[in-house]
Image (cartoon, rainbow, N blue to C red):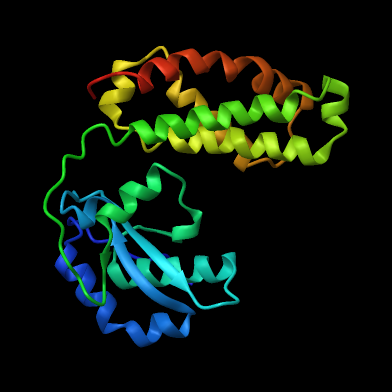
Amino acid sequence: MTAPHFKEVRPDLTTVLSLIREREEEWQALGVTRVRVFGSVARQEAGAESDVDVLLDFAPGAGLLTLARAREFFERLLGHRTDAVTEAALKPPLKREVLLDAVDARKPQLHPPRDSRKRWKWRIHELLSDIAALRSYTAPHTLESFAADPLHFDAVLLRLLRIGEGTKYLPQRLQDLHPEVPWATLRDVRNLVAHDYFGLDPALVWVSATREFPALRPLLQEMAGEGEE
């Protein structure tokens, strides 16, 4: 299957909702029972490079393959990169923000504009949560026992990947204001984990999980406490 061709214009909320409604029979056939648009498109703040964020409800029996197929369907339908998630997957305070923005495709009710400044803070809290999980996963171990525990080893890799991925969604101006955090290097670690062709040295993973990434915690905590973006 060929990759979709993405439009080089900003995704417009009215157009997005209309397209979704027109193809309701098709997305229902995929197991989707409800579609809500959220994020920058719902707030009508989207730019030409913005993704379309959709909140999906599924019929019983859906799995991750169903979610992936639905995301691909909407991406091709809308002509824009699309992120798809379910309400049950959302964590507070992200869930609160998403539901405040969400516009139901079947019965759209546009919300008045809201101040979207400092929305990046919940992403900083997610990074802090991932770093705390690294400590939890490694606390019972020595390097030797950690290397022999595939469950905790894989759990640490997932958190390292999440941290690198999470930095991609922070405003560039915020990253520029805080060069003491190695943003690009964190994303490089994410790529090392995601494209693990030859294996990852447990000793290197151990040092990252117990020293390198926890050392970033005070920097992120300071950012989370900032009064202005």
